[in-house]
Image (cartoon, rainbow, N blue to C red; front, side):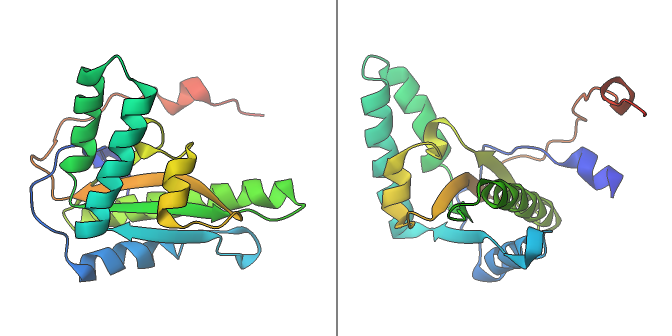
Length: 184
């Protein structure tokens, strides 16, 4: 398992090949086995492909143009993250009314679900990147409205998924755990 975790990478460049439904369903099923407080299963998945993905591209483009009106090169380079992605899954977490602690716990659970999806993607020869800012639009109402999320849902991640353009084999340098650990 440790070797698999070491190989996991954020993949941003994909082949122009659709991801089949069985693989998408495997990703979604893997997510549902993530640990979650009181079995609230606080996640919801919005799958964007083909036409809905084209519509999302317009939402992202409008947002980027509004956010960076004097930086067309930034808009163009940011849009490549969306236009070159065959599958996007937007993941939300349930907000628990009058219980901020439970809402935070739900976000943790959804983050774990996303990691489960990421590891499953690796096993299916898919690449993935978890986006939040920029074209991830997680902090923006435009994506929330576009997917039709309710007021009781918080966006946690925009997952760009596809077949990697190339396999990354180099190990990413990490700070040794000993430098980040205090034994009490």
